Figure (tube, rainbow, N blue to C red):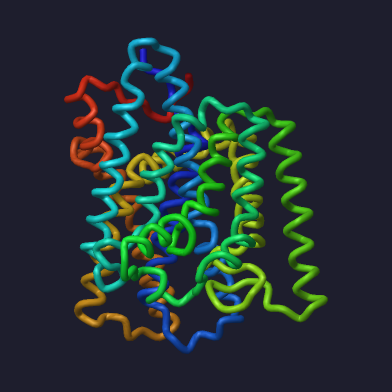
Length: 360
């Protein structure tokens, strides 16, 4: 009998992909005259700041979980390297698909969140063999890498710089240090997920408490020095492009808090009537991530972005939450057709068993 899926992971995956859709929709539909310091703009920025970190952390958790399940079976363990290579190549192809669909935003070669996850898949093989202590050290170093990056590499927050590379060396730099989602420091979220898969509750609470103290200190520092606390770009203390150390620590702390709360209340989540349907979004996260760029591209091509504030809010909410009923419909009638199923099919053809988010 197949084991039960881990509910709080599926719930968090659903939240992560909806956050991702919301921030992309807001960028497409939001009127340009909205003040950056308005309540609405701050809410959108907070959601946007957590979408990718949560998405990456859950990938780290899931990859660690898959490797543990595979290593429990000697027959599966022999296929781990082949599994990682296939997953690596599959995610790179998916990144290329995203870039081609949204070529009004990206170049075909632009590294993105899926190429980050592809590389992290390869990293996960040696990572899973490390002790929790060594993972914590590596995690801490990655959180501090933005301080080093600013001294060693050209760091700009403008979009043209982030998505362009004029040479192979620049392209490698974009992947590693100064692109949209460079390994250093964005892999810290992946490693956090790997840590959370195996650590005890006491360590989770200690990490979260320390992170909260640091996050509050960033706010106090910004107030005392009259520095803008957070923005997507520019000269704030917390910046997304490029990711600052303050942002990396604060985002890791927030998604860790999300994880602790969802894990603690998993039993209560099971008793909520709509939870089961909501988790269908997370079970289809890769497919939804790729597909949601298609209507956004259509809106762009037909220049359907002249909305007032009320219209922009309504259409953003509709576009975000429409994926909930669509995922339920897909699960009922079309569950054989998804990128997740395609990856499982490719692995099966190579006689490599796939693993899902289920209890060990």
